Amino acid sequence: MAKSNEPTPPETWEAEYALESPLTCPKCDKVVPSLYVVRLLRSRVNFTSTLPRRGHVIICPECRGILSAELGGSI
Image (cartoon, rainbow, N blue to C red; front, side):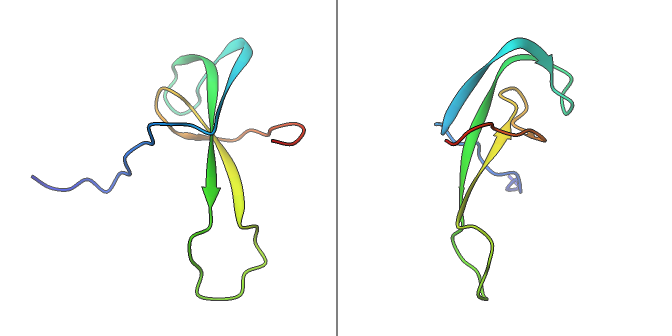
């Protein structure tokens, strides 16, 4: 069996945020009541990087597609 290039989704999320009203995911067109936040950790660079060592991405709980969104405040 051929190995898929798609990463296996994590079993745990950094956080789950409920939405005030459900929205339609632009990636999969499914209505979702919440979004997941996943932490990014820089593991390796071959140069001196000025980019942050950590970050977060917001993903759809249905298709796990990365969404264009912003978290207000600090997490």
